[in-house]
Image (cartoon, rainbow, N blue to C red):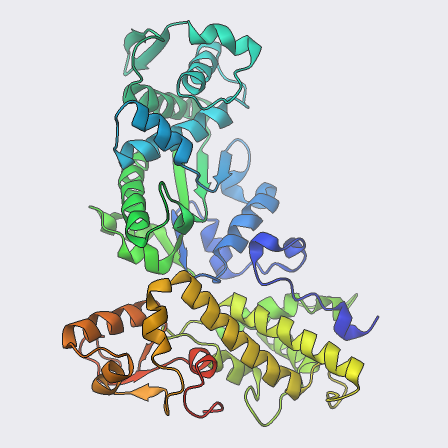
Length: 456
């Protein structure tokens, strides 16, 4: 097997990776994500949120906040069944919906633990009464007819199972679980991913924003509890568009994933370890760059170096996403494997991937970047298509307004601000977006849209 074939750059999407643990880089951001002080993990699509979420599961025993006696739940919210139940009792509160969902996670998980007898019965009754058990186990059947005992702050009450469902039952699950956890000296971490994909009826942008804003309102109440802790994974643009009171309370509790050139080089070097069996060295930046230089035969056309590649991969916010770098490497590897079969474009100086393969990979990465962007932000497709074939990727405000087909200043102002927010447009004069008069289409987008000099 050739050295080129030995390299496993991965698949570019954490959810599909089978061997991620083998080459996962425990960066400073990963360490911060593991901290008890981090409740929100923010990042663009492809920034590594799902990779961290997946590594939480695979490295559970090594992460202090998840270690015994603490407990943790990981989930990707599916809310339609919960919403249907609430609709039956004519409750349309999305805040109640999120509390109901979280209570169901807590009840289901705690029932896997050794609970006090009465608490175990209460949680089973809750799940059965609220339709969260599709097939009620035989030993639970009697619970449907047994009265439900609820205790808040020492005040006890009983609910007949024939009585209407009450949101106090949801609160009872949450607060009684918190007390039980405190009695045993444990924290319960609830970690939720793919929040940008939640929906009730369809998947409109406004619906998602409202639903997640109400989730944050619910979470703002739950983080006051002593033992139930929350860790949420958000796309940055969606989180910043949310509207809820006390948003500033989370400022010190959030982590925004940003990747430096050094971290990306080290991340890539972890995937090149297979070329250096038995070599035990710290994978710091200098060693990582040496390994990268041994593989890539940089040419005279972009990308001409790893530093140059890093600059070319930047979006409008100055961020480089791990997914884009990995996709570039995957495409370069495939191109070179094909060249080797054809007997053309051999790399020089004993390296593995030629400059021709790198140039082809850059084009393919640009096309994938634009496709992904337009899939996520479908409302920008017609607007962004207006830029195709332009002479330059640099614009004044007036030039950009014309290029985007926006005649009204207010329309242009809104679209420009939105494109800057999501990283599809860069501000070059370092002014606030509404004051700026110098803009640039990021290199990858410009290359895919065939704007200006392809090597500019």
